[in-house]
Image (cartoon, rainbow, N blue to C red; front, side, top):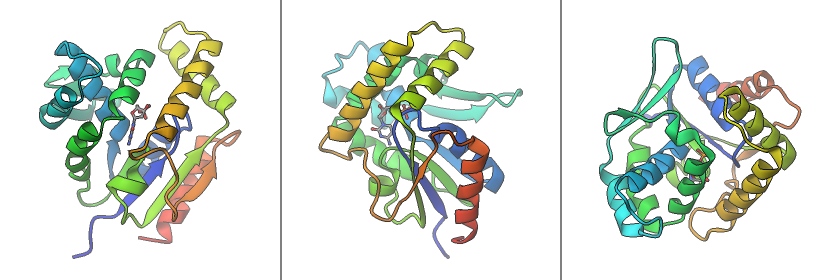
Length: 224
Ligand code: DC
């Protein structure tokens, strides 16, 4: 039997990966792995347990045993559970993203999450969204996308997303935080944000999500 088809989509925060992955997964009837959510959940589990952000072993232990739940509610909105408790909005704050980026640097945390991420590859297929999906977690994936967008456009997208949720943020603060997070994600020694050698790079600056989804689906049709 051939292995489950996996499409990896890696790229920096705000490149549009989440939207693209959800739509591609829906179009193909595939499962979705939001690997960033696993790092966000690890950070949240740690802060709930009162761990110091510097406690690598403590976060790794939580990453191994925390209870995960991903799904959609009756209105089709995403729902994320941590140990049975709904935390969807809690993990999407900038604070949760920054904590995720800190715990994501720990080798023991990345190791703890590796098999948990691979377990999402179930028939009929998987779309995997993250930073190291094509390089580390699914190096054999037959289709790898590296999605980028200019830093200005990514900051503006985040700003609009947060504003829609009724959260007040400043565009200048967001731009600075995005630049800091990009730097931290790209410069860490373990699983840094880089395109896999066999990834296809797509730039979403000024391009609609529909166009990007169509490109990915066309590429998928040629491979699966
Ligand atoms: O995609 P996101 O913003 O939800 O990710 C949150 C943080 O988790 C991000 O700063 C980097 C980290 N991350 C990672 O190191 N590896 C992944 N595969 C996904 C996310």
